[in-house]
Image (cartoon, rainbow, N blue to C red; front, side):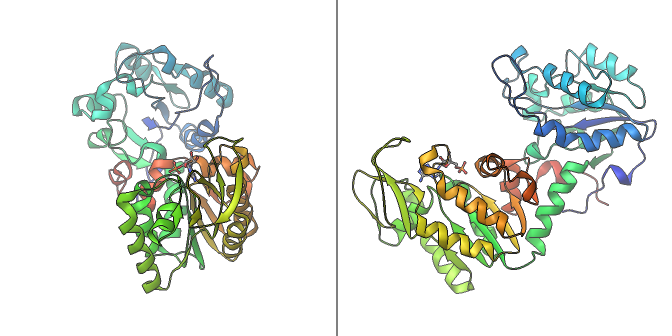
Length: 395
Ligand code: AMP
C-alpha cells in the first residue's frame, strides 16, 4: 500500500501538473485565513514541481459549498497567501473546468502556478462523476495527489482524475503514509495507542485494528464510560453507547487473551452539568452518582496512563481524554500530551482535538508527526485502503 510512485519517480519538466491539495483552511468572518498549516504543508510539493520545470495547476476544496458557486467558499484568500509565500502571483481561475480555468491552464508556463476555484462548487466532485473528472484531467499531463485530508474519499479530484492521467503521490501524502505505515507494520516497541473522544461507534475500527498491533491500549474520554458500564459500574449521566456494551466486553476479553495491556480510567472528574463552571468532584470510575457525569479522567488515571505512555517507543494518539474544550476538564488531555512528549517516542497525533491540544501546549515541534487529516488518518489506522492513495500508480 505504501509502494506508490511519487513526484520524484517521474519526469515533470515541461509538463502541466494538476496537483490536488488540501487548502481547506479555516476562515474568519472577513475571509481571513486563521490557520495556514495546510498551506505550509502543501509547499514542499509545489516548490519541487516549480523547481523541476513543471507548470503547476493547483486545485482543492474549501468547506461545504454544496455543489454551488458561493463567494464565501472561494479560494481567493488561499491564492493571495500562496502568492505571498511563493513570491509570484498565483492567478485564481474564476471556475474549475470552465473558460477561465481552461484559459489559465493553457497559459501557465514552466515554473509558474495557478489555482482553480473550489472543486466543490460542482456537485459532480463529491459524486465522482467521470465526465467532470475527465474535464479536470484534460487541463494537465500529470496528476499529483497531495491532499491527505481527503484521501479517504473517492471524489473526482482525488480518485476520478486518476483514470485519465498518470498519477503519483506528493510529499505530504508520502510522509503521512510513511510515518503511519511504519508504525502499523514495523513499530518500535513498546507500541502504545491512546484513544479517546466522544463515541465508541467512531473508534470501533481503530480499536479492533490496533489491538492486533499494540503492546498497550489506553482508553479515555467519553467512550471509556461504555467500558465502565460493561464492567458493571455506575456511570450516572456520562456518555453511554448501549449498543456497544457487548463490543466493550469483547475488547476487554481479546486484550486479556492477547496479553495486550488495556488501560481504562480508575478515577474521573465529574460534573453536575455539561458546562465549564458546573460543580465538580473526583470519584472512582464506576462510582458516578445519579445526576453527575464524567467529564475528564481523574489525577490517579492521568498518572497511571502517563507512566505507561512514558515507557513507549511508538505512540499513536487519537481523541481527547475529556471535554478538553472546557478548561476545567482539559487537565487529563494535557497530562497525556505531556507524557507523550516526555516519552521521546515516535509519536503520531491523529488530527482533530488531540492535535489542537498538542499545538496549544506549544508541543507541535516535539512530536514526530501531526496528521493533516483527522478522518483520513483514522481510516488509515483502521487498516482501510484510502481510495485517493490506492488509485495512484505503484512503484
Ligand atoms: P472525537 O471527535 O470522537 O475524537 O471526540 C472529540 C470530542 O469528544 C470532544 O469534543 C470532547 O469534548 C468530547 N468528549 C471527550 N470526553 C468526553 C466526555 N467525558 N463527555 C462528553 N464529551 C466528551
